[in-house]
Length: 105
Ligand SMILES: [Cu+2]
Image 1 (cartoon, helix red, strand yellow):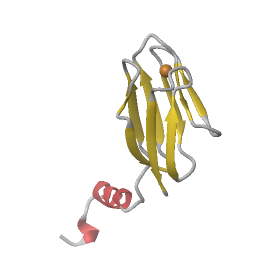
Image 2: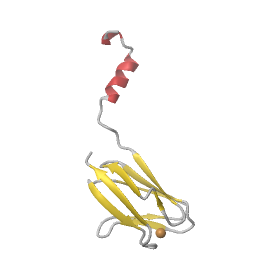
Image 3: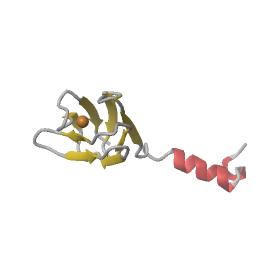
Image 4: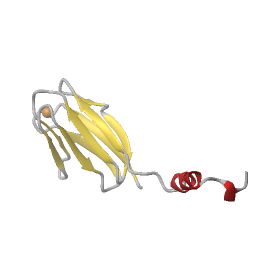
């Protein structure tokens, strides 16, 4: 069917699907002192959300970089600003390790 006969709603959907990928939220669950999944992929502008199911506080800490405090039974999040590979750990439990591969937007 010719484009001009498409309903306005369908035209709008076409326009939206032509936009660059939208920012997403990537969830990392913490349970039993483990980041899960331990390694994730995301892109600049995405939000990482840590869901702490433990009764202990944890952090997502990057040496010489950022730190996110994740209180017990709470959720904390952060927006990724830079591309690159980021290794993080929990300051209270240094055996807890995670990795984020951040692609350019
Ligand atoms: Cu911890």
